[in-house]
Amino acid sequence: MSSRNRAVKETDTDALLTKYAAIQAGYFQDPFLHYFINNNNNNKHAPARKTLPLINRGTFVRATAISRLVHEFISNQDQSSIKQIISLGAGSDARPFTLFHARTTNEDKKNLIYHEIDFPDSVMRKAIIIQNVPEIDNVIPGPVEYNIDDSLVSSLSSSRRGVRLRPDLVVTPVKSPSYTLHGLDLNRLVTSTAVTSLLVNLRLDVPTLLLSECCLCYLEPDVSNTVINSFVTAFSSSSLSIVSYEPFTANDQFGTVMLQNLSLRGITMPSVNAYPSLLANATRYRDLGFSKFMRAASIKFVIDHWYDQDEIARIDKLEILDEREEFDLLAAHYGLFWGSTSSSSSSSSSSSSSSAWWWQDLPKSLEL
Image (tube, rainbow, N blue to C red):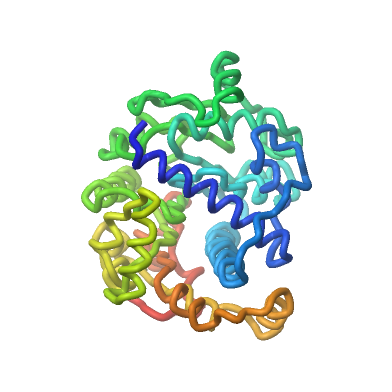
């Protein structure tokens, strides 16, 4: 495993602990996240990391704004239709289990298909947790098939850094009609044929959302663009939407220092330099195929316009935000991007009815 990949994986641990700290501080709820804190993850009262109020608030906006877009995609379509989500670089995200838990009937649960993709050893760790925690295993619509080697489990449990699996390895440690956990390097998904052949259980005939939460920025720009285009091509006969959360430099001193601080930890974000602004990122997604509908908003815009005064007053009471100016600067360097390859005027057939109209009423700062 390269040192770069190891550094990227460590960002997942940071994000997990940071999100847990915000939950413990009362910013939002997630009934499943605590299971992923420790290796056996059966401790519901794992100690929370002490995190600055500005980080907690940023985590709150990131988590709830992405969830809002995901829920809009799921709920504002034909409720009897099947919806599919593909999460790139999913890491320890607990969103699929929260979504399954929230769906009240078995039929409703089965109408959601969720795919998670990450490095092979990362998904093996996640698979062990899913299998060993009944609260998670039971929420996945079955039947659930596990493919976890006992010797691998033992090695993962006894090694601090875990097993260094071959970078060309493709594993599927958890598989069900509704949830599939894929272990492979995203660099493998550079053709539509690779997308359709390597991602088992993938449906090409249903409305699908591609979700990237601070993932594509770690890839070289040509690779990340090729990966996105591979999915667009694979879904050329149906409909594909995207929700992406990514940092950008804004070509200013704050953005430069932000990247320098990350580089000290061995973390590089090639795509951030290639697409340094909100407009550059949104244009990128539009040009890669999300041309029927494309919008973007900085996290600063989101916190200012997507939440009512009661919600802002609630989080203001949780912690005193002395670093408000610094928070505004930080929030101005992260963006949400959402779009679709189809429009509301497209065919009304079930395979192409995933039009973007459900997002049109959201407050926006940039429309392409």
